[in-house]
Length: 172
Image (cartoon, rainbow, N blue to C red; front, side, top):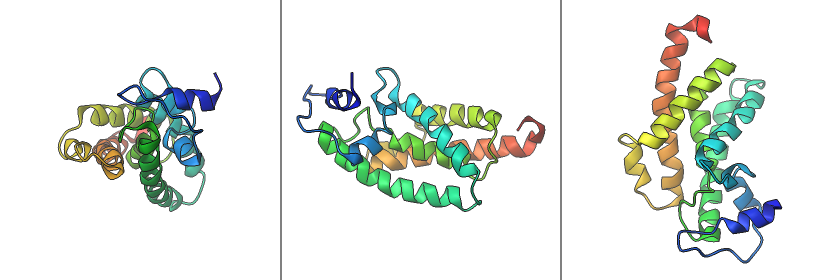
């Protein structure tokens, strides 16, 4: 099935499906095809962030924090538009928040596959478990809530990942 048809097929909780083609904002919100996974789109979206982290890790140290801020702001706009497109504020196909949350998790950690795997696992645990204040942001039914709960989950995961890198330097 072509990507545009898959994007239209997502629909919302009421079963409505968009009739217009998706725009660039919807594609950004779904992180291309990642958010269209029929199983665990948030997990697939997080996996889709790993190549971006790898690419950004090749740039000067300020590139990743700058990318997080820019992508986070663009992600809020994309989530808002995609939410309207699909008729649900936090449609399952919106995974740009997972991308930003994962980048927060691995920020300022040198790229390695071990760090990627541990950062992925930690971020998914906190994103799913939603400890306070993650759960608080999750209750905001807006594009900002969509983004901020994952940023908060990323901060929890980042603290543990940084501790692991510091205390187990040979593992990373």
